[in-house]
Image (spheres, rainbow, N blue to C red):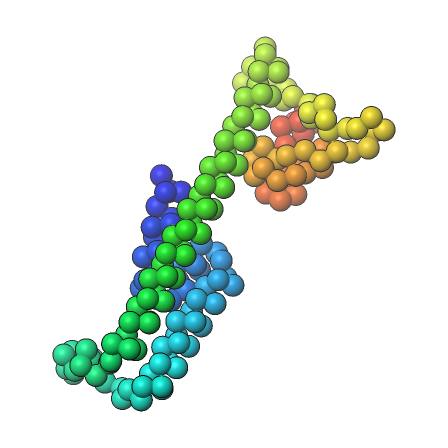
Length: 172
């Protein structure tokens, strides 16, 4: 559920403040790029059309009359594109996270089915047979938690620091 709400939240935050939705997704470069594009474009348009500053608290009707459509429309369009980009990036990250979780769950099930008679406190399965090659060299395997490649000789994933399933079998 949380993975499904993150893209929507990022899009809403991107509409509120340029780049804020990308910051929520921890996409620092994209956030800076969108912020500079929207704010810089707005400043350039305001300077190009020689728009005088208006106090919106004093007279809200003067704000819409003082800012021409040629300035407002590009800023609104850029903000909408930023929100759309934040939503799409959030959806892609959520899909990647779901794939990694599914791969980890499949690896856990394979490990449990390989052990067969293992109890709740039983010994975990050894690393996959593909972990060592014919020459005895170490072959990379995927971490069941994050899905990234790790060295089968390690007891933990150096990407997400989670213990690997075969690490506990060596400790016992």
